[in-house]
Length: 83
Length: 149
Image (cartoon, rainbow over all chains, first blue to last red; front, side, top):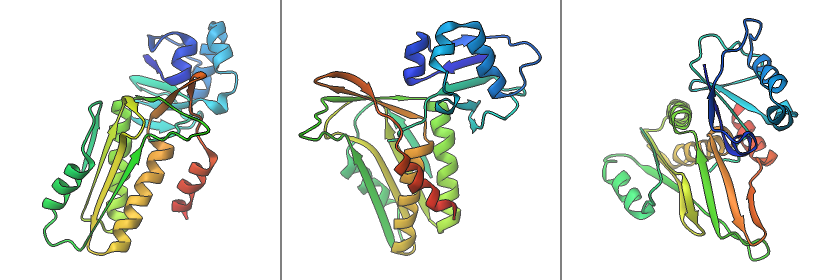
């Protein structure tokens, strides 16, 4: 699956997107965030406050408890200050 | 119903006129234009809006559909820019058309409150001290929450 990052999260990770293949035990968005943190120090630091990370599965904004399912693109980003 | 995301500037007057020209028979239209702000005590030279266009189009489209049903709008349009903007330039324009003024006002207000909290745009301000990301404000969440009643 593809993960896309936006705003300061993108800057802190120094990448806008990446392809990942998480293990089967990664079920929810929250699991994915934890898995990303465990494998990468920059990600661990950038996402140490999970409440500051929002998520979208394809074109749906979802809470961290949502199962990833068959989403093709998962976006992670800070809360939006809007237009 | 339309959602338009673009980097290029838009002309709020021309957009309003085009919206009104296709509005035969309706009683009320409301247009709101959001501008890049700079305060004397906290000057901003440019604003860069980062966007996730696929998500923005889907989210704003859903909000328009909800507003149309909820307030009985005849139609609604949102134009939103991204990329680098100068102070005073329009960022966003919301236009609603309804049989009566209250529905047009409420629909526009609902759409703006929605855009402030749920549309995937992130703002980076360039200031004399350097660049900074604008944080989401809790009063915007409060404004959005009032529509959940």
